[in-house]
Amino acid sequence: MSEQTSSNAVSDSAATADSTDSARGDIGRRIAQRREELGLTREEAASRAGTAPGYVQYLEEQSTAMPGTAVLIRLADALQTSVAALRGGDADLPPGVGRAARHPELVELSAEECWIRLSRHGVGRLAIDTPEGPTIVPLNYTVIDGAVMFRTASDAVPATAVGAHVAFEVDHIDEALSQGWSVLIRGFARAVTDPDAVRRLTELAYSGPWAGGERDVWVHLEPVDTSGRRITVR
Image 1 (tube, rainbow, N blue to C red):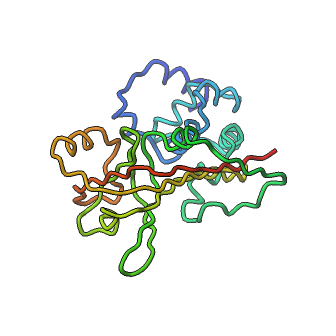
Image 2 (cartoon, rainbow, N blue to C red):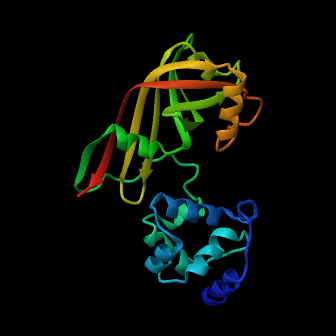
Image 3 (cartoon, rainbow, N blue to C red):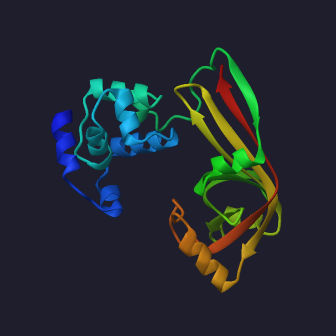
């Protein structure tokens, strides 16, 4: 399908958010995620890539979309990333494999900037003391009422955070530009046991835990100290 033809076809179609999510292919999800990370509309991304907004929509929403290398190169450049990243070729590599930028600058983030970056939900790392020693585990979190909430199982490692002072870290790395940010929260973790509160948290949660399984223990992390840093390139 050509860029112009797909633009017209997509413009004439309408789909719900659920059907769009289920229809997306891997490349489409990565394009949409990166575009949203940069705060770009489809129109802005298309303009940067020299293509039609409808074609960007087509790539993002259709699992059968198979963009050519030339289009992916333009999109990767527009989205400040790499073709390999859009294709998922670096999925099994640790973040930060690139070289440092020529003129990096480390900037402290204000508390407000930290919470803006935490957004409403995401994946962070919980640092806790366990009988086996200090442990760090990744988990899905939701920000509700100015606090970090997460779900776990009663016999899982994150459940040992209840009743303890812990640290929680979230970060984002821009591989293409060798820059990024990190936010660190220190606070006290407690279990949420009130049935109404549990029901409300479950309703407000953006997603279930990626790890799946029965994870019905809600933990409330009340921030005591919030700090963050950002690496920029001059």
